[in-house]
Image 1 (spheres, rainbow, N blue to C red):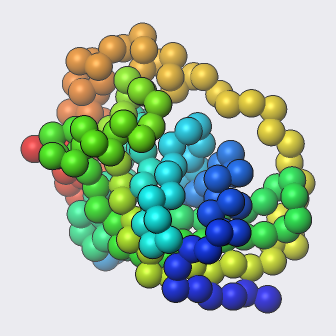
Image 2 (image 1 turned 120 degrees about the vertical axis):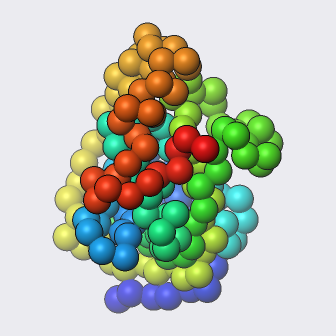
Length: 180
C-alpha cells in the first residue's frame, strides 16, 4: 500500500543512504521523458526536504534541459536485496554548475570526480513509499570504473570541450545550460 509523506523521516534517510543505485526522471513540456540510472557516491540527503545529486559527464544531458524548462524531477530508490520497498522523491530541482557561486561549497560534499558536470538540488514536495513486491532480488557485484577512467584519460579541459560538442542540446533540441 502506497503512503505519502510531506518530508523524509529517519527511516527514509537510512534507506536512501543504503542504496547503491537510484533513478532520476524528468520531462520537458513536450518531447521525450528521461529516466536515468545513477550510481557511485553521487547523492546526499541535505535535510528532510532537500537532496543533492552530482551529475557526471555522460553522452547526454537531458535532465539539465528539462529542469531549465520546468523544474519537475522525481528520484526513485528501490530495494533489490532487503525487504521490498520503493521510495520516490517528487519535487522541483535546479542545476548548479561549476560557474555558480554555490558550486565550491556543495561540490565538497562529494568525492572529487574529474567528470563532475552539474549538481542538482531537489526541493522535495512529496515522498511516497510503495511495496516493491514485484522488484526482483539482485546482488551488487561492485561499481563500474569505466566512467571515472574515461574522464581521467580525457582530463578536465577535454571534458569541458566534450560538453560543447555533446551536452549543450537535448534530444528534443533544447538548451541544457551547460555552457554560459
